[in-house]
Image (cartoon, rainbow, N blue to C red):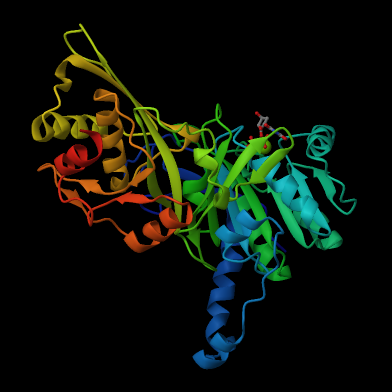
Amino acid sequence: MARTSSVFICQQCGFESGKWLGKCTSCGSWGSLVETVVSILKTRKTQTSKMPNSSKPVSLATVISEKTSRVSTNISELDRVLGGGLVPGQVILVAGEPGIGKSTLLLQMADKLDDVLYASGEESTGQIAVRGKRLGVKNRSVKLLEETNVDAIVQVAGQEKPSLLIVDSIQTMTTDDLSGMSGSVGQVKESAYRLTQFAKLTNTPTVIVGQVTKEGTVAGPAILAHTVDTVLWFEGERSENLRILRTLKNRFGPTDEVGIFSMEDKGLIPVDLTDDFFLGSAKKGVSGSVKGLIMEGTRPIAVEIQSLAVPTKLPIPRRIAQGVDAKKLELILAVLTRRCGLNLFNWDVFVNVTGGIVVREPAADLAIALSVASSYFDKPLGNVIAFGEIGLLGEVRKVAMEEKRVKEAKRLGYRQIVNSKEVSFLNQAIKRYLR
Ligand code: TYD
Ligand code: MG
């Protein structure tokens, strides 16, 4: 029978203590003691000691030929980040800031599958039902469980045998075997471990929600990443509709994919990039607007960069950027001033990427630079799309996945593509398109 006592183990040196101490008496680290269940440790040890007799090697060829069976989530963008769908026994951590839309996404996912058990320690069944109504959930097989005891959830899931178990969120889960509060490192780790064991034993795909704060300091995704198979990161600006789901880790699929959603009145709508979502309202023939092509994972996305350059009397001109790194903008402005002869030292410059997307890629440099120059000369750029990295010498460099971008630009109907093949220096591009 499992014992229900717990000890505090130092995460730095492994020292064991019967009670919580602020500081480890062995190595001296502060706050490194984490409450851990003793009985679980014992079972794990016994299992390992039995292993040599019971484990047998298998031929690699036979393992590879067994295809992983996947269940589609019926949400295209979610399938994309999962690598095709859910794998039996897969444990997925969906992490993100509070209010970003994790519960919304998972309830929509539950609606599309049969026999899902949605266990919530954050909200009451009534609150979930209100959200369900708003989202238009019609699936009658979705079961809700209001519970914060992880062992009770495992027990109910064992009886219900759902096709998918959702646990929202791990920070609210506790086990009686530990005395720590919900959200403490010990409770979060142990709860995740028990859910993972359940998933593996019963082959039930399990989704665990992890809350993160802006500082990312609360016991959360970082300590769970190695326990789970897949880590999905949900992000976006709360003031904007755009939501991006990124794969940070995936034992069953690619890690360079992203899912793109728009948060609407009726929930998350997968964004179809074929109808250039991020260019929706782009006005033609206005100075300061330049289309760029960035990659999100393996997908090219056409974005609009807008700039406004205004003469200023301030001793230090303003440089304000949204969706572009401020330091990057400073660098581009320096290149424009020194290498291309734009007198930007007495101009305020504002840059914005429309649609709430953040461009981190160097490939956006050229579009940003041309957009500032277009506003400075007050000359529109026409039906042009630009991508390329800009060096300190003012040279335009080739970027990754160039062919993919060219193909997408052509598909979107741009007649003129400005890249390193077209121009070697930024100066040349400005002369050709803006003078
Ligand atoms: P929620 O899924 O509760 O976030 P999380 O679980 O990550 O904390 O989403 C909360 C936000 O989403 C809330 O501000 C309202 C908004 N929302 C919509 O815009 N449309 C909807 O259909 C729903 C259900 C929520
Ligand atoms: Mg939630």
